[in-house]
Amino acid sequence: MQYRDFGQLDFKPSALGFGAMRLPVHQGEDGKPDFKRIDYDLADALLYRAIEGGVNYVDTAWMYHEHTCESWLGRALQGGWRERVKLATKMPVWEVEKPSDFDRILGVQLERLQTDHIDFYLLHSLDEAHWRCVVEQGQLAAAERALADGRIGHLGFSFHGTCEDFESILAATDLWEFVQIQYNYMDEDYQAGRKGLELAAGKGLGVIVMEPVRGGALARNVPPAIQAVWDAAPVRRSPAEWALQWVWNHQEVSFLLSGMSTMEQVEENLRLADASRPGLLTAEELALVGRVRDLYRELSPIPCTACRYCMPCPQGVDIPGVFELYNDAHMYDNLSRQQMAYSTFLSDEERADSCTACGECVEKCPQGIDVPMWLEKAQAFLAPC
Image (cartoon, rainbow, N blue to C red; front, side):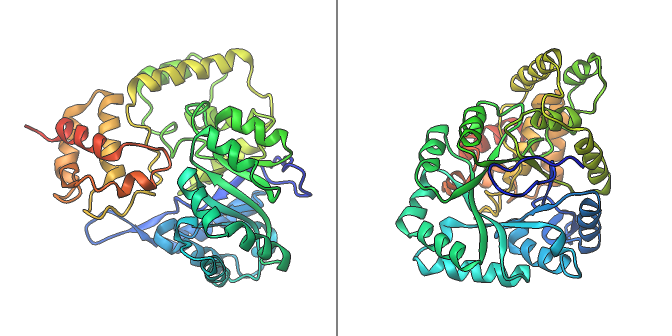
C-alpha cells in the first residue's frame, strides 16, 4: 500500500480509503436491492480485507444506507479493528434546526459507532444553502467545542457546490484541516474542481477525493467507442484503473475513497493503490484520458452519480434508476432494451410520470441536476408508445 501526505497533519493515509456508501445489500421481497439491509457478512469481509491490505481510513455518514451504515460500522470495527483505522463520519448540517441539535446528533453517532471519539469529522455536503444552515445554527462553534473536548479529532467538510462557494467556505474559518471533494476525469472543472483542489492543497489542507469513478459509471458498461480508445493505449489498463490512476496522478490529492461492494473490487483497488503514485501517467496518456472525457460528454446527458441523496422520493420515483436507463440508452444506443427495462423492472410509482415536481430532490442533489425536468424528458423517451 502507498501512503501519502495529508496536508499538515501528522498522519499518513493510505492512497485508498474505504468508502461505506455502496456496501453490498440484500434484496427485498420485490427482488430489488434493499439499501437498508446491509449484507453484514460480506460487508465485514470487504472491510477486513481492505484493512489487512493496508487501508487505514474508513468513511461513513449519518444518512448512508438509510441511517444503518454507522451502526454496521460500529459493530464491525469491534475486536481490535477500530484501533487499526482512522474513522470518519459527517454531520448532516441540514438536520440541525437549533444549536443543540449538533451535540444531539453527534452523540447518536458516537453511540452508533461504539466509540468515544471520531478521528475525522466533516460537515456534510456543503453548498450555499447548507453553509447557511451551518452559520445560522452556530455549527462551527459547536464543532469547536467538540474538538476541544476530544469528541472529534479533526474538522473538515465535504462539498457539492460551486467553486465560488468552495472558496468562500474555505476562507470562513481556520478550523478546517481537510476537505472532501468530488473529482474525477469527467469532473475536472465541476464543483470545486481542479481549482478548488489546488486552492485547498495550497492552504496546507488535506484533500480527499470522492466519486473517483463517478459512482462506478466510468468502470462498467463501457461504450464500444470509449473501449476502443482504451484498447489503443500503449499501456493496457482497465477503465477503473484509468479513472483511479488519473486521480492518484495528482500530487495535491491526499487519497481517494472507493465505495466497494464486491471482493473483486477490493482486491483490484488494493492492487491499483499499490501501483499508484503522483506523476504516473505520461502526457500522452493524459491526452488519451481527455479523448475519453470528450466522448462521454457526447454520450451521457445527465450527470447523475447514483449517490441516492435524492432518495427516497415522496412520490416513490426511482430517480437514479430512471436516470441510469436514460443515460444507458444514449451511451449504448439501445433504446428498445432500456424501454423494456423501464416498463418491466420499474413499478408504476417508480417511473418518471409519478413525479409531481415538488422540488425536494433538487434541493438534495449534490450535482445540481434539474431532476423534474430530466424526469419529464426520460418519461417521454423511455415510455413505449
